[in-house]
Length: 175
Image 1 (cartoon, rainbow, N blue to C red):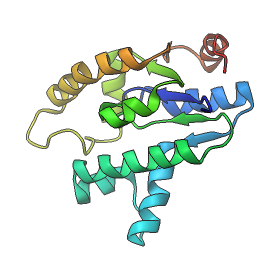
Image 2 (cartoon, rainbow, N blue to C red):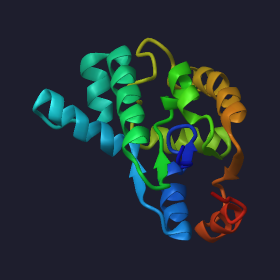
Image 3 (cartoon, rainbow, N blue to C red):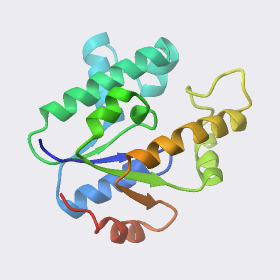
């Protein structure tokens, strides 16, 4: 099996930034799950759409199934070690957790309040229940997801620092 470095964490913790730094550091190809999902959706639906719009239009079960298919296809298609950043909800499904086994899993984390502020700068996400206060919805999801991320991680990176700080932290990884 080819070992990849797979980056996980909550929305807006800096997964893409860390993923790109890892790709540069190790001179490896970089893949962003959101971009791959958009490409697959366009192939299947015949129209382009963002992950947020796909979830809003089709619901979370549809989106999670699409996301799982894309993740599985990506892992089986790659023939060289790569850096892959996942969406915040990708590691929640048991089948995706199984796919993560044997890979380096980097959990990017930041303080809960900083992440909430970053999220709200872009508007209420589609995965927050519409009938709940955004902060309560966020806190509930944060508490549900953090233990899953922690259990799956082989390395944790705090994204509060500068890109240089983060790069120094990732130098402990090896393939």
